[in-house]
Image (cartoon, rainbow, N blue to C red):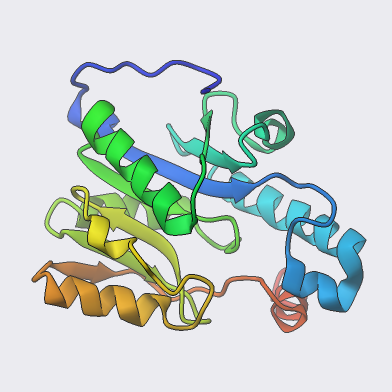
Length: 215
């Protein structure tokens, strides 16, 4: 259950730009599995905490954000990373596509979203400006994507529910972005892209992040 209630009636247009962050509880042995192969589970957990803290700090001024957490009882563990006015909700069961679709349908159908932007927790460089730009683009586009350098995407934005973008997607592969683009074209949807950014999944990614300028 959410840790604070949502108004369910029609909202002002500025309050109907909904933003979700999908994230995993910072638990030992369950995060950054590919990174853990190189730096161990303790190092991977510490890295995950650093990345999540960086991301949420970047977005600290974002007015309204819902953290969709997994496992479903993880809200107390992620709450220290979140702003007091942000909310939490469980991701629920199913594969990533099913969980994304469930959140999408809930926000458009039950919570009256006008636009919906979803990010993960793998890309610490996402900024306030990225979220703002995505919502602005959704005024005139069906879909917005933030391409990740590994072939996935770090953001997806929708102006309405589009279940076809989540069903039987090759999650966790380098084909997610290109397959999503292919489906948008097949469905004759208008698509806008944001800047490419790097997810932090491997030791090479982590090393580049640690050695970034002004780090």
